[in-house]
Image (cartoon, rainbow, N blue to C red):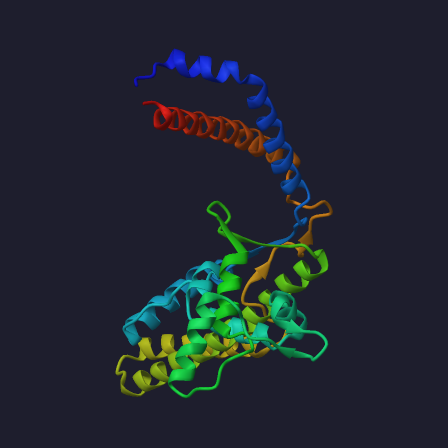
Amino acid sequence: MDFTIYDIIRFYRRRSRLLLTLFVGIFLVTVSIFLLSTKQYQASLEMLPPDTRMDGLSAAAGGSLAQALMGGGSTNPDFANFLASMGSIQLAERLLTEPKIAQTVFIDRWDTEQKRWKPSSSPVALVGRVLRFVFGMKAAEAPTPFEMRAFVLSSLDVSKNSDSRSTRLSFRHYDPAFARLFLSQVIREQDEILRKQKLSVYEKENAALRERFNGEQSRGVQEYMIRWISENESKIVKAESAEYFSFQVLDPISVTVEPVSPQPLLSVVISFIAALLGSLFILAIIGFARLLARASAAP
């Protein structure tokens, strides 16, 4: 049996009351779910990566000399690159040592009465426990650094400002105090990791420069290398200082007074679209089911 667009319009017009009832019902349910969902507060800050605070031409020239002598280059340790590197595993390990953070992030796995971790019930964790049992390994109950790393990667919002070369870092949580604590701890731990990485780079660089210095015949190059070694030594002193920060924080961590989600207007718009499409779809299914029933009942 063929249908035209006019047949479909007549079908919905005859059932306009049912269509309106479905629309209102779906709309009310959907908007209620959105508006009654857990409120999320956002903590954020803006910072500059270390390379934006170098000493201009001298640092660039020194870096070029070091690259020429050592045969390599240096990477820009901005936060996005840091999260994508193995440094994020170190960050996850450090965050797991903070009970307030670990127990809040994995609140469903922390037994507050017995003060111990419960095994995860996720499908991945179940497969992991089976494999550990097969190979005779002890089942891991406490959260792993890889699980914490996955949470950090999924929860932190990193956006770059191409004009000022700054980075905006944001984190959302239902507890505004925890949002501030988590973001400040991430910055503090990441800064400590980068500081140690910098120390290692400077020490290796100086060792290579000193080795090259001993075999260098040109006095002018030797003098330049001595200046670069001296600059590295001053950087090492700064990196060892507790007041030194790998990232320059441009503004203090701010937490939104009002929740950033759910958004009432967006919730209403999404609920309206969902109700419209849902009511039309349900009514179409009902009409199709009736057609099938009539076709099967016909001789």
